[in-house]
Amino acid sequence: MTDHPRIPLAGVIGSPIAHSRSPALHGYWLKRYGIKGHYIPLDIAQADLAEALRMMPRMGFVGCNVTIPHKEAILNLADVVTDRAALIGAANTLIFRKDGKIQADNTDGSGFIANLRQHAPNWQPASGPAAVFGAGGAARAVIAALIEVGVPEIRLANRTRARADALRSDFGAKVHVYDWVQADAMIDGAATVVNTTALGMTGKPDLVLPLGTLSPRALATDLVYTPLKTQFLIEAEARGATTVDGLGMLLHQAAPGFERWFGHRPEVDEATRAAVLSA
Image (cartoon, rainbow, N blue to C red; front, side, top):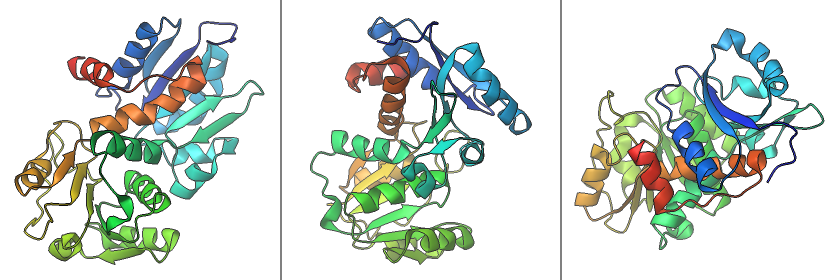
């Protein structure tokens, strides 16, 4: 399972971090597969990030996940950055290699697609445009993944248009920027509609979109997973669209890191989902 000389440690670094479901997920997998290891939440301030990364391998860490607010800054501290992390401009997975180098990767996009494939197996990426709301790090990962699997056009809106324009510059001609108030035009004819913002999350305002133009043949998905069924998904489902919640993305993006750290590729199945929901 692993030839690391000590019991391997992994974790998730961010600030705040107490809300993270990742410790419950990785802890479940460690127990399920009988692996000696630990996964620990680490609340690390931005000012302490570089020092913490230098210390972690000496403490027995083989890698970690990275979340807000460190996903972009971490690229400047890593020794090796994968092509997809560089394209996205953020990393969510670090591997502390045996040669002493820190490798940064981003599995958010692959986790996003795997979630759609698992819970909407009839989804056809090439069947029409995708309407994406939000222009943060998660949106970058989603856009890169959608382009990679053959979505012909990305319609993008953000409450601050300049951020959406920046993504258009980075990802090219397939991305078309809309003003936030043009949501109905964005959604009209879209085969896939994605919320990458925090709107709709517990404690945040709802994502309010005019869904009158949403096709009943469309797929609607939300990266928010607390609550599992956001108001956006409830309304999309009421209009006949296929809906996919955001929990599966969390589960699927975690699997590659777990395999690299602990030497076993975990299954993302209903038992895994139930274990995280009950934590």
